[in-house]
Image (cartoon, rainbow, N blue to C red):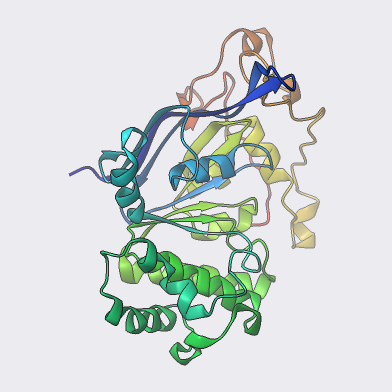
Amino acid sequence: MSDYVLETRDLVKHFPLSQGIVFKKQVGAVRAVDGINLQLRRGETLGIVGESGCGKSTLARMLVGLETPTSGDLFVQGKNMAKMGGAERRRGRRNIQLVMQDPYTSLNPRMTVGDIVGEPFEVHTDVLPRDKRRARVQELLALVGLNPDHINRYPHQFSGGQRQRIGIARALALNPEIILCDEPVSALDVSIQAQVINLLEKLQDELGLSYIFIAHDLSVVRHIADRVAVMYLGKVVEIGTEDEIYENPTHPYTQALLSAVPVPDPRLRGLRDQIVLTGDVPSPANPPSGCRFRTRCWKAQDICAEKEPVLEPQAKSPHPSACHFAEVRDVVHAAE
């Protein structure tokens, strides 16, 4: 049996750009995700980071089946979901569930907590007999630290952190092996963020879950992730263990991201290796030739425009880094 519970191979999602009103003509495509290769091991947490517009959310939607890939393969527990038909794909999606970003809009205000957490049983009716669903919903509420007796309450009666716990309970209903967390704490206060992160880690230990954790807060990702993938303009530009990415970043974009994280300790601020990027992020509809980061990179040379770097270990980077001139650079950041 493979050690990977999820694997993507050259996963691509392009959104066509059309011109005209009556007679529409495709004139290009937004290359939101452009050849992603990732692996998720059993019991592992894979963090995915990058600035807005890099393709993180589009990748997440493909992984949970909300978007159909333009091309490429998506294996969940050894089965290629990208090639499955409707009914088979629906069954396969039970193994990967989503915890959404905003706990205030992801819960239907007209449904009780019991109905929200139990909704997966209404979609997948063969999972649990109807007469056992209420008891199972109460078990799930207790599992995430909520009072099972609150099953008949509505979302507006709960705080933001409690609402996110409801979302987590809903994601656990079908006993998935993989939970995809799409910015699950970004809408919460810092103190509540820590409680939700601790809950996710506790559930992972108890249930043997594997997580894909998407976020823009690098400090949060460092706290929970075993490995981290850095995305830029639809591609993964660096991937490694948490220590490799945070202690020994080798891609210029990763180094710039880490240098932008606020440093809470005043004594370390003067030691900060500040990296200021120039220019704007190119359009995913017209990405630069060669390396996509070259238009903002201080290391860019002619080869960067002529040849696209491969995501693999380099001479001065023991972990995969998609840069012709990858090398370690110390960066002081908030996760120290």
